[in-house]
Amino acid sequence: MADDDLDTEISALLQRAEQRYTRGRRALVAALRDAGQPVTIHQILDMDDGLAQSSAYRNLAVLEESGVVTRIVTNDEFARYELAERLTEHHHHLICSSCGDVIDFSLAARTEASLDRALHRIADDAGFTVESHRLDLVGTCAGCD
Image (cartoon, rainbow, N blue to C red; front, side):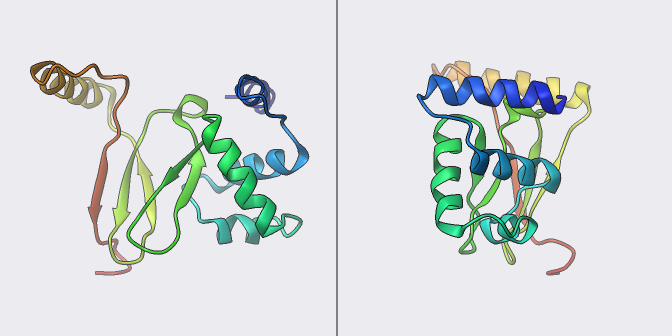
């Protein structure tokens, strides 16, 4: 999504939640877009030294509640943040159970469609209505092996 289109979509999501797209929120979105992978709040703050930690936490909470940001919880002490899939593209995660790093990955369209069909069958059997799916693979990264 082009930057202008992204900003328009984010502004609309925030407006629906009766929030504004402030300068601080724009800076957080820019940091997440530039990171290209899920990052901790400390990594976000390192990317933009103009961000205050306390307002970054508050603004990330608002962005998450508004559907702009997704928080990924790992087993270490720091959650990772990324732009929500509705603003980027559908993907999955490799989560290191040792260091907490999160790596995005995508499946080939054919594999994704097959996975989606299998997940819908499971959900149908349970009387569950699927809205979307996430796939997180948990293990150890190459740096922790």
